Length: 152
Length: 383
Image (cartoon, rainbow over the protein chains, first blue to last red):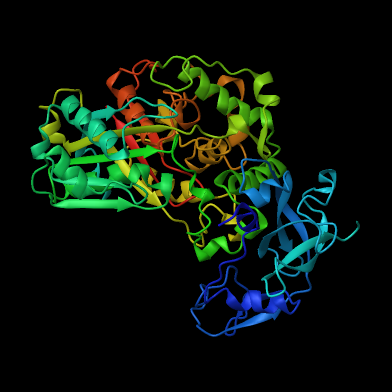
């Protein structure tokens, strides 16, 4: 592999349980697995409900609004593609309508902006954010959710 | 069950190689050296070893070890998962096996060239689908990032500061400065060095992260009855526990209802339930310190203080010699060597033998813990 080929961000390696999340993301929808029986949300997705043990599930659409629960600013040593954008933020977002459902992501200035595109002084726990979607790499790349400040 | 294991076995031998950023010998050779040193320390011949335990991340398997050191017929062998979370469970599994008559002489070990070898997180090919798909694409690549995320939230919820994390780093460094075997023996740490150090994953700086070490350690476990005839003073395995809490997600525990209450709480509940003494009776503690924030979390988890009080507990020299709870008296993973926490076990043994380089006077009880933030394990040792 050439240096250029290795210098790409990691794309999600999905599994059977997680695949629907990424398929919905590719359509611009943030959906979380919910039990068809007891209706409780669960994340990460898994084959059966840990509360009522039902194997039936559905994917419930979220508003895409949330708040920063925590964050780090990553500095090298990092994988090459990440080191190029360092220092960058990684955040955990708690969803507005589902406290306890939290997603790891990046706070960015625009959906396709670099990982270091938001002034780090703007990062704080509790900041309101909304989801956007970004296609990684080529046109057939995986789409991932990212986060924008509600009040940029 | 607790009564069956309680004080039924003892650690009778410990061994280690030098610790360095780079050792020339391969991991297998280092493992054999540490194990044979531990057997010599015990005064037990390798041909009598009939049980082995190590980590799933250990790359030398029992077959290689047994045939290299000249072990006899082996009737119990076990590997424990979750990286540094498995350290104390290696001893725990052997203690249970010996207490229940499955074996008579057990060896636990860890050999690792993490100093000169590669960092596991740089492997982009072996990317476990769960939970890595939810974290790694976003640049949450390393254990330090994963724990940094919890540390920031912990600071936010409980008012912990970088000075609290410094208290942890300093206590470990001060003990390493007393320990000629420690990688940081001649390297004192100051608050200014800490506060101006380069970031690794904010809020964690260089000194909040453990060392990268080549080295190996081992210990020998046998029945309490046989231990009385060994070369050294026996150190009894008083209690042991593993911990995998309900709805736990590993180091990226952001999906639990209460992410700041981790495996330590689960292991601790079982540990204290089966012990004859409690946290207030612990003379010295060896608490897993891959990252400084794991100490306040573990202090809470193992019941040395209340929820959210772990940072404040570190104040006023509490973790230093003479403090409320002398910590990681060999220097720990932060300042002696990072070999997945096995040096914490051997240091616990040294304290209860009275042979530590930073000896706590008359130490009779020691808590040793494995990695917090991952499925974990713990040991209560007594003299």
